[in-house]
Length: 492
Image (cartoon, rainbow, N blue to C red; front, side, top):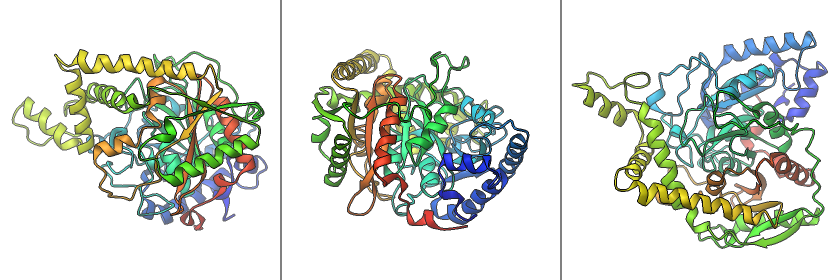
C-alpha cells in the first residue's frame, strides 16, 4: 500500500487488527518516506531504523499472540527532549550532542508499553528555547507547507514530521506555547495538558513549573489516542497529579456543543500585531462553532499586558537554575585543554550553548541575583497568581476561552525578528503555562499565502477531554485538518 501515511490513527489501528498490513510494513513505509522526504524538511535529528524495525516485529508478534493494544505497532516520533535509552538525546544543543541517555523518559516508556514503534528523535529549538526551531545546533527545520518558512517552535520538528507525513503523530513539550504554536504554523492539532497531567520525568528541563508534554497530530481524535498513553500519575515526578485518567478516545463526543459557552476575550482581538487574515479565519471558526450550537460570550482578561514580561522573567530564571548542571564535568560537551576549573566552566558553557540559551540564562541569573530577586522574580510570581485568578474568574462565566494561537502565520526562515519581537509572538500562549491550564490548537484555514492558521481553545483545569471533544466535533463539520502540504503528497 502506498498511501498508509494518509490513514488516521484509528484507521491504522483497525488495519493492523484486520491484518491488512503489518507493523513492519507500516514502519518500513514511514522509514522510506523519511529517507526520501526528510532531507528537504530536516525534521529528524536521529532516525532509529534498526530499533524501529525490531519494535515493529515485536508488535506483530504481540498481535499474533492476541496481546495487542489499540496502538500496538503504530509508529511515533519523539521530540529530542525526551530521554530515550540507548539513543542520543540532544535537546537540540551542542551541549548534549554526545549524550546517550541511560534511561527512558516516562512518556517514552509508556509508549513502549503500549506497543508504539519509535521512528526517531526530532529537531527542536535548543533546550526548547525559541519559537521557530532555528536555534537548534542541527540547523533549522522547514515548514512542509512552505520550505522557506519556519515550522514554529520549540516543537518544530514534531510538527514538521506530522505535517509532512513522516510520522502518524508525535510527542512535544509546551513551556510557553511550544506545542500549540507549531501546530498552528503547520496546520495540525496540538494539545497542551494541565500541568501535572503528563509526567515530566526524563524530559530535559527548561522551566520546571511551566514545562508540560503533550500530543501533536492531524486531528483531535489522533491526539486523543496518544493522550491515552501519555497521561497518568508518575511517582518519579513530584509535580505529577495522582488523578484518574479519562479515556479520551471514548469521550470524543461526550461534550455537547449545544449551549457550550465560549469566552471571547476582547483584549485578545485588539492586540497590536494581530494579522488580519489570522483574525478573520479565527472569527470564521467561531462563527462555525456558533452554528453548531455554541454560545459566544465576550469576556475580559485584564492581565493580558502582563503575560510577556511575567513569563520572560520566570522562564529564564528557572532555565538559569536548570541549566547550571551543564558545566563540562559530568556529561555533555567539555571544552578541550582547559587551563583550570574556571576556564573549563566558562568555555564549556560558552561553546556548548547557543545564543538564545545564553541570552535566557543571563536574563534569569540577573533576575535571581541578590538585590534583584524581590524586585523581579518575586514580583513576577505574584503577578502570575493574578493571571491565574483572572482566568478562574472568566471560567465562572464560560466553559472554554477562544483565541488565535499565534498573532501571525509562520515566519520566513532567517527573518530579522529580534528576540523581543519573537517573545511578543507568544502573547496568546504563555499565560496558559503560567496558570497551568490546558489548551488546544486546531487548524481553521489559511492566510493569503496559503499558510495555516490555528484557533486556540483554553479550558479549565483537567478539561483535556472537553477540549478534545469540542475540536473533534468542529473537525467533523470541517476539513481543514485533512488538508495536506504538497510535500506530504509525495509517495516513497
